[in-house]
Image (cartoon, rainbow, N blue to C red; front, side, top):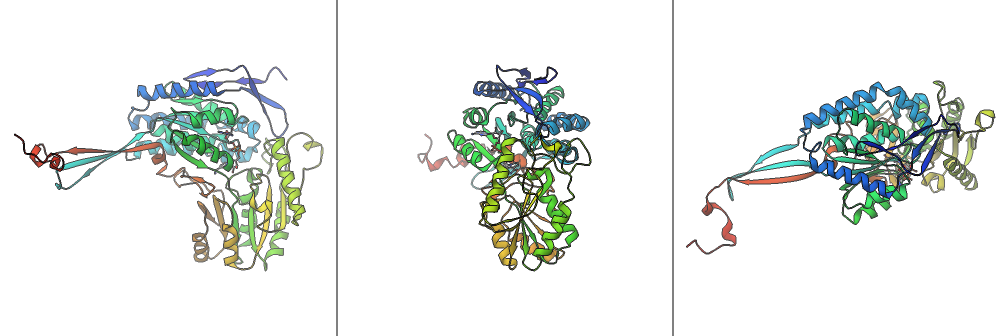
Length: 505
Ligand code: NAD
């Protein structure tokens, strides 16, 4: 291993913490070791939770005014914005995003989304008074939103910084302490966020990051008796396991899980918009996005024309150097993921799907290193095939046929998932009517991947539990307390007679 490879450590209680073991971070486009990171253990998770709990109890952050927290968070957002190029570099080498995608989405969204939570800290209604009538007794009532305590944040490798911010932002805004568990392959941008937060004045122990295997470190956080909430993004099977682990101490859980988004192309769609949009919806970041539109539903009437136009347009996608602004499609995250996608493509062929574009690993000198899959279009896919039911997480668009609108809606909803869906149509009334029948947390009409921090995001069915983003995001990171204040003053006006029927002596 080259000696100039930088080694990174965990961040616990305001300090960098190393470990006896390390993990290598390999650039998915080259397979070269880009950096190494300390590999944390359950003991590190325990140390981070202890620090987070002590910080919470000390009030150093939890009892700051919301305005003071908002001020520190605004500084953090500004720093994220000013460090965008360094963060983009870390993300390109960590998760294989292309520079255009990292600038536009992976890191480009980070500062504005963090800034949204900084503003929300100041504008959220932390407390409100609810007067009640004088019956049965004169009183007033206060409803308060208080921080939960220690929040564990477990995120996957595809959008580590952004998906982390969707949890860390509202958790910090509400006054909680946080323990972050990134994926083993992509800890660096979240580590930098911890350092920036500390430099901007977030006290020791309030934000911590522990690395290491999910089944050890993530599982310890999910079951830890001193963790009050676990916020998770990742696969549906691990989401189920986290719910099970969290149930031991009845901790709060929010889950953002898998998806199998259906794109409904109606016959009146503008095909210039729909063809480009369908490819954008599926192929962005090599299809490794939970809300990708991976099933395109097209009427029998339009089917051949749409498939031809998709192939024509997708053939122009440039695969290659992730640092090049002209590259459209980068690698997939790992050799394991590449092999998994290739196995799905075999299964598609065996079950009768037609590979009309791509279908394997690309050839050529450039692709002898790295984890590559050609942009692939599968035609004649039916909704009962494995490729239509399971998350592939690769640049693979499945094109399905429908007979009429009701059939399209039925197939779209025939999935264990319900994260995203979309409609391509020039008739907005019709598109809205279809949208109302789709069982998905987000429905895009004539667009895809539009995620606004002020609008809720999350899944129906086995795509998750709870919603991230939007003005109610903080509700998920607070306890609601009702304080009742009796104003009668005189004992004889109280309703204690329900128990004490004897008059006073
Ligand atoms: P994963 O579930 O394997 O891992 C996600 C995280 O959980 C990682 O940090 C991992 O280390 C940790 N983990 C693994 N096993 C664990 C365990 N037993 N206990 C606790 N933590 C554990 O997911 P992945 O393969 O890394 O990511 C891809 C998945 O994430 C896809 O299914 C995708 O759809 C989903 N995803 C969902 C959203 C969303 O918002 N709904 C967003 C992005 C990704």
